[in-house]
Amino acid sequence: MDRAVLAEIEDLRRMKPSALRIRYREVFGEESRSSNRQFLFRRIAWRLHANVEGDISERARRRALEIADDADLRIRAPEGFFAACAPGESARSLDRGGAGRDRRLPCPGTLLTRQYENRRIVVEVLEDGGFEYQAQRYRSLSAVAREVTGTRWNGITFFGLSERRDG
Figure (cartoon, rainbow, N blue to C red):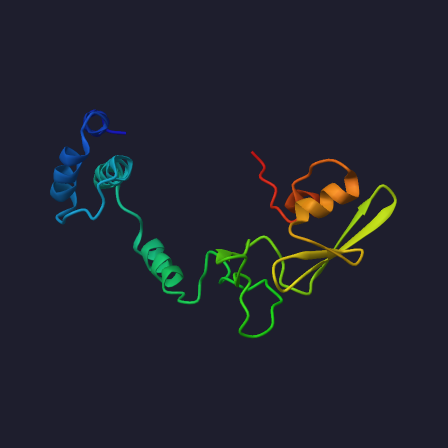
């Protein structure tokens, strides 16, 4: 890469966000909508590099526009997509004094099963936000897990409803 561009990029590293916004205006000819220092630094550095080495090809630019034009492209599924709730019912229905229902919990009527020490544990999710296990009502999955194991457990974890984070 050109030494002058490298030197200019090093100068950018030491600039404050206000100075980066001014430099952004000089390089791009428009105001930045962001004040994020890292974003401004990366955008300006990329543009300086592209000015010297050359921008992306017209073919690549057209392809990027085709991909961006895909209107139905979604990053995440819409809320309630995976819920097997009755029509009009939301997995976030309000219960227990107005607190939002935990999104990790399945819809009412769902049977949660787990094998524990050669026993099959079956728990039904109730309409009012409670849980039923062996014809007895519990306020939380943790209470059910405590009843089954005799020790304290996070009920969401015990029944495998939490997403694992690898990291």
